Length: 121
Length: 506
Image 1 (cartoon, rainbow over the protein chains, first blue to last red):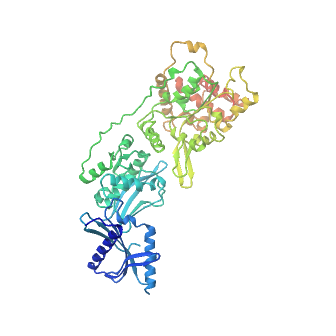
Image 2: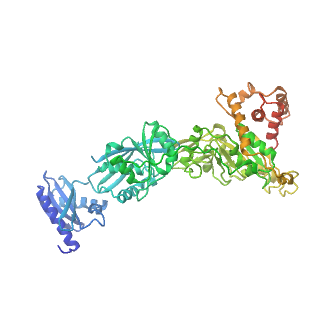
């Protein structure tokens, strides 16, 4: 696999996580939902029918820290706002929901290693 | 299991509390929360612990780490929790067996590469741990000497985090050579033989050492006041082991064991400069309450040179510890009591220019200046000074003498003998020094000879001495009697005591 730029790495990671989620019996509702405030990478219904808003962070090495470390308090709070915005625009405000984070580390041979943490906030 | 627990010790003055260290590693965003009222130095432990773990080739858990130091209400300070937190974190991360560490106390600061640095207060911390029933403690190698004073506990000295981990994982432990307890009992650098002449001051110093009487030396500059004061510890008896432990504990908290060996039996001497503050003198501080000069001089000598130059209130802050032998410091975070049983030695010039001696012919001060100068020492403080000695300029006779004065060793022998006599006399009475005889006992069982008593009563009637002065003179007289081998103070003993007290009226 030749060198990719940042967008390509990100898209690759998101696709890898989507495949991973489908295997885990998630139902993908929407991907890359974007409004002015930001973007939600993946919106899915998990196995117990709860809306999961998933942020995917992909990195090709840990030289600059683990992917999870890139998600700070501010980012987590924005995720929360975005999740509520999505629920509001889709008429589901008041539904149960959770915020998940997936870290994707791309190994040298191109295989993604996924770490998934559910219900963070 | 992502939960582990071990122990460390928090100090509040000399009192230690065993602190439970708990670490929980939970799913969630990477983060680190430290609970249990940490101060700034302790909050920084996060970065020290993290660097030490990574630099020792261990894995830092990229999850939500919660560290709790309990009891949560007790304010905790300093860097001594680093090692405990670090080991507990690795146990919670399951790289160390969690069940192994629950009964062990860990003390030590970590450097970024994992070395374990010395900390303050190891001895009081171990005493507290031992009282709480802890059997094993890991301490920094540099604190080993002090830590070994703690008997009945397994002390494991460690110099590096890697060494601790190897021990916990394999049981293998590089035994540090056990240091044999070698008490230090003499200081050859200072000796009374160095002091030329000054028979009065020498005698007063000896009496002070015998009875624990506070002393003031007054004289012009360059006559040897400081020399004499610095040598008083060399003629005081060696501390008992219990006393030495107390002294070492106080110095351990103050962090002054670099200057004073933890195994020293010598009476300490502390000489704060006259610009010292009240807090430095009696102890204090808002976050960590540290002992002051008067506690560092516990069982030893507190020497204040140029006493009248001290700031207002500094010397008077010593009145309470002079009376009770302890000092209680109250701050918003709590009250702390330190021991402060010291021999007070004051030195002063007779006047601002320093030349008011003999007939005072060279003195350039006005008579009012002279009066005011020593008047700066408050009456209640001066009342507690039993011996007030003029130190005269040394003449050519003394300086030219080829033979030296008596050495400290000889004087110390006499002091030890005299103190033993006094200790035997007071055996069942709860005190051991002549300066500690209560007033009631002075009027009943510890009266001097009748003739001497008559003399003192005459002096009292003439208003040459006060009632309290009379008691002070009798106490000093007992020290003379012990030194001279008299069963009760004779007329000579009493006049000698009277002379040493009466010469200077401040």
